[in-house]
Image 1: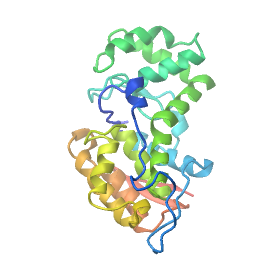
Image 2: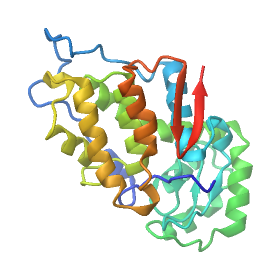
Image 3: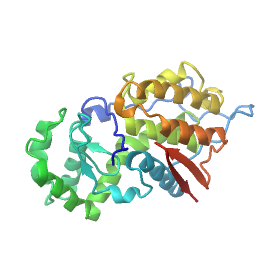
Length: 279
């Protein structure tokens, strides 16, 4: 797991902050944009279609877990020393950033008698820190025990979709992006977290829109995505844990250069020097 780069979630993602995440459409219209007479405009994709979503999960897992087997990550948990406490599960829920707490709260609401419920007070206390107080080996073991159950796997899927996948895809559709563009948003929100600060997904999108128009605004998608990638890389390089930008350069930018806006297979890419293929 030495290559694994963890999400940067800006501040603790409490329920109020997640609720405050607003998916914005361009100001000129709240409806889907009418087709424009331009060869640069592409049909909006649907990354939430089952086959495409599976591809998205594998692409993220290649960067986050150095593996295409994203379902094997339900049980994953460790502290990688990045100041965010424990990192765990399919999307890197962190004890120090609030999304792990929200996950366990949701899981406990659905299944009150579960192995992790007794750790909720400790998770609330360590939120916003890298502390293991009240957690430690018993918590790690409880996480792995819970991860063997369908109920906790479902809880992880649901939180991933609620906090990361659905907001990214919805914003991508509003911006008139293809499957590749929607995936670029998803991968960014996984690493940088939702929000409007300059180093969050919303801030990166805002920076990109100062350089290029989205397809929904009449812009060319390739031009806009290059601006988005450039804006994201500026933020990635500000933190040592994210300074390797190959998940953009030799994955997403490669697909863009190939004109593979639909993310059709076969897909071949590299992350951190490792090669992957989806046939």
